[in-house]
Length: 320
Ligand code: SAM
Image 1 (tube, rainbow, N blue to C red):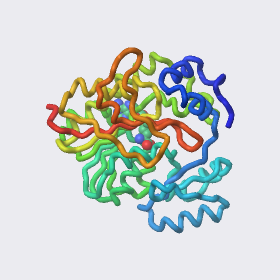
Image 2 (cartoon, rainbow, N blue to C red):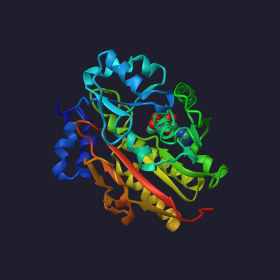
Image 3 (cartoon, protein in one colour):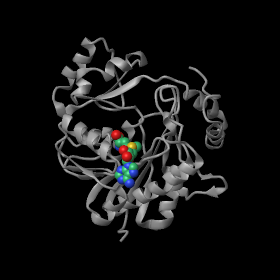
Image 4 (cartoon, rainbow, N blue to C red):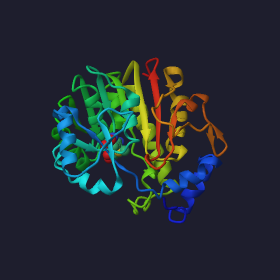
């Protein structure tokens, strides 16, 4: 496990020291130097999951099941290259997806027959996970605003035979106005600073990172979350997720939203099947957050998982 302390942007390390409790700082900073196992999910919508797994074994891979997520496996990091080139990945029977990102669909729990909205969907890992959890029954509207990424999403959905998914190239900020209270469940896997990706595998990941960019992301995230709430039926649920650590893009977005929508929305505690989790921060740089923000969850990065943030909201009353 290499220590990336001196290679991470100094301002980022300073911020980590404010975000992470003293006893967790060392392991968290060191985790940015770790090459993790590669994780993937077998796509049950493309038929025999056992056959796809056997095919991976035949090309020399040694998959280990992820106990807490059906159809998910890891292989040692040295096998990442072979995994990504396997024909089962190329043709949609297997989807390479980090362990943390599996938690978003598990937290939302989409059920067969539901109307689901994925407001920031490309390239589609979580859309496809939700389609699998729904057994392709119901409808998922998968929205992506960047055209090239929308085409990638569409190709992945087609390859996976996720027939319950309709893809739209649109700005998610305006979906809530047009599709008021139309969905049972909404995922906002928000565009973010991606701090979880900082590390040796993506040396350029922080080239455009700055506190100014963090603020700009936060305003997009607030607009997307508000749109998601408007698009959710009363009684429906919303999961907000990011792969970044800055409180402005996580707890700050939830706190802001609670202040805007008041009791129309409640924050639910999330039960996660892993140990490397802590409650949302109670405040940041002198500002105390709404007490409900403590129900949100931070996944702490370690040797297997990258950092992740999750909040689950339930719509109690109409926001119109
Ligand atoms: N959920 C995806 C997955 O699991 O594969 C990853 C989503 S990524 C974190 C965020 C996505 O949101 C990017 O593809 C980005 O282009 C898209 N995006 C950014 N702004 C958006 C907007 N206003 N409306 C819809 N999508 C947006």
